[in-house]
Image (cartoon, rainbow, N blue to C red; front, side, top):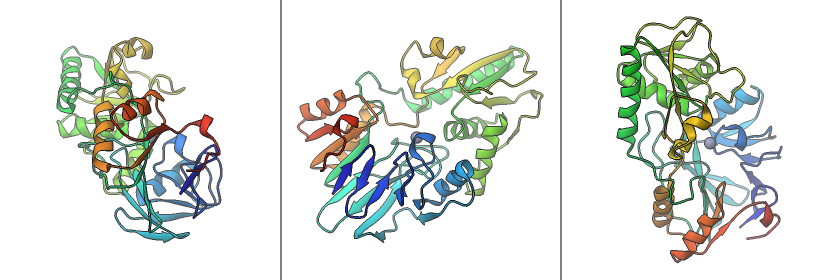
Length: 320
Ligand SMILES: [Zn+2]
């Protein structure tokens, strides 16, 4: 039903899935840089289409898909479902009338302040991302992470410091902005983040009281800027700050030292280990192929009785 040739393809439809080099036609699950290329025709949700054109140019052709509305394409019935990862993020079900395949793309389960929660339809074949596919990657409760974030922000205000949150510009920045504004903390954003936030707003996702950082911090406002690894993350005139990185990798205790921040909080837009296992249980597939994660995760699934395999460059050109 699919093959792998330095990227995933639905064989019958000759349709790439998140292939990172230009294709005649390719499904784009979401607009993070490691999932897009300048395709001749992209299949994507409206939210992803807006972000894709923002990143690659307005002239790109996109066949827009609507969540839960099937499209007949190249002999397959294709349906997108919310993936809970960022604006427009989608899983894809492909059905050839005999077997069905679910491709998760990047996803997470549970609530989000800025994207529809993931849905997990049944499929015969599951191709899943497994970024956090090691047992020690178990997230604390989301409510506890949000409470800690607000505690750090208010403690910074109390000390006369500016709280500066470092987050990826697409997805995590908007999520953390909405969590802060919902708690009554207005946000000033790095210009690059602000542009993407405006796309969220135009797609109907309200981020609350936020504005572009114009060169001066404002009392009682938090700053949301790029990760410290980005070349232009630093904003001028901030004075005394408390820096907070929000990333799933903060499940590793040394993350704050690695990132050079005062605090690191494990607010993730990827499924943690328990959610990955839950996904497999709910989809109940006959075969599982794991991408974007440690190969040991497939071993763990086999120990649980599933037919599971890592899908990675070593498996190039294999047919399934
Ligand atoms: Zn992603």
